[in-house]
Image 1: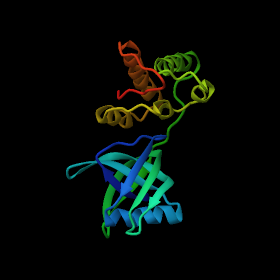
Image 2: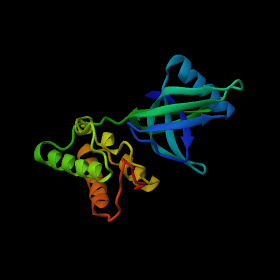
Image 3: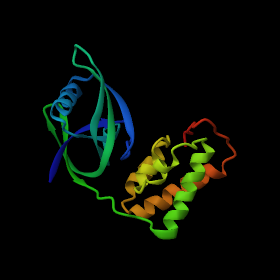
Length: 194
C-alpha cells in the first residue's frame, strides 16, 4: 500500500488540471516545503465538513510563484493520477492517506472516438479556439479534454467516480453536447463555467 500526504480542500482537482494555491497554514507549509525541496507529490482530496472524499488526485508542484519569509508559498500544482483513499492517519498535523492508484486505460476507439473528437472540436470552435488545433486533437485521455473547462463540483464528483475510461468519455461527450446545444455564444477563447 502506498502512502501520500493529503491536502483536504473544498474542491476536486482532476488529472491534467492546474490549480494555483496560497499555502499559509503551518501544517501545510511543512508539507509543501518538503514537496518542493524533494520533488515529492501529495494528494488533493475533497473535504466537506469533517468528511473527506474517498478519491483524490496526486499532484506535483509545477511552479513556485513566491516563497514568503514566514514560510508561506504561492504555488501552481498539476493533477496527475487518480487514487482511492483506503485509510487515513495523522503524522503530526499532516493527514496521510493509504492509497491505491486508479489506472486510466484506453477508452473509445475508431469511429466512436472520432465522433467524440468531432464534438470536442465543435466545442473549441464555439469558444473561438481556432489556432493550434493539432495540439488539442492529439489528446487521448478523457481528462485531457476537460482542460480549461470550469466544471461544477457535482460534475467533477461524478467524473472521478467513473472508473471506466469509455464510460467517462461518454459522460464528457454529454457535457460537450449540452454546451453545443446551449444558445450562449462565446468568443476569443472564453471558456464557460459549465
